[in-house]
Length: 210
Image (cartoon, rainbow, N blue to C red; front, side):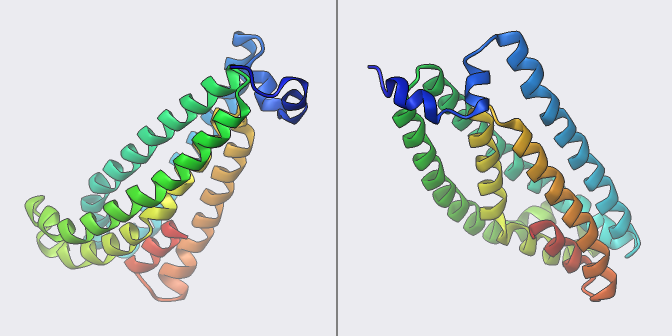
């Protein structure tokens, strides 16, 4: 079924034209910004660890215990994002703008449902998981850090789905800008919240959520 004709063509963004154009050119232009974005994110994680290390070994260990659980959430949201991005791209390739818009709306609804389930489940399971991982003396700070981090699950999942929607439309440049700006803001907020505001490990968690 055809959708749109010339009218839909005029509404297409430059990224959409890139997607339906030459594959080799599209691959190069789409992958470059995402590589840069991933490098920026990795650099932020390193800076975050350095700031937390200043609080002592227990705080750094607490972040280390929460990180594997956090990566499960990241992996789940990235997996959902990959599906959303692929679905939108296929519909754009078929010149089905209405189908792409419909996929976007369903993706946002999915964010709400998944986030509610994740947040509830992690609040219940966090302490048993940390004990099973042998958190020991780091259990208190790990709980403090984890509860704040996972209370912001909806923002984390929403961000990844929003990035996926942009990627699906062939707009990896704006994704790079958003991820870069977010990492820069977090890197600035970390020392302010951890040390200047005196929030300690909770400040590191709030910096990540914000």
